[in-house]
Length: 88
Image (cartoon, rainbow, N blue to C red; front, side, top):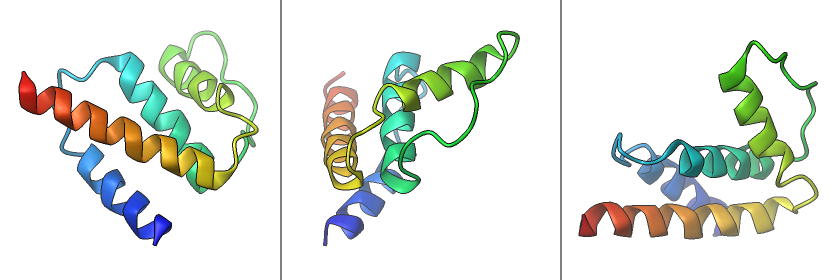
């Protein structure tokens, strides 16, 4: 049940407007990776690769959360961002 809800919100996340802040996109990325892969399993990208480094840092920031916990937070965040997008 929870997995289906998560997958549904992962699809909905793809419909978020371009105007969604990078900060929010990174939060979603980190929670998504924690939900699907678990703790960070790669080394941090070099300082010249800013985009991948930011994504890695966002994932590292939620390290230690259970996959269920990360999924729950991901779903809440997607709902929040969709509501914000709808009201703007």
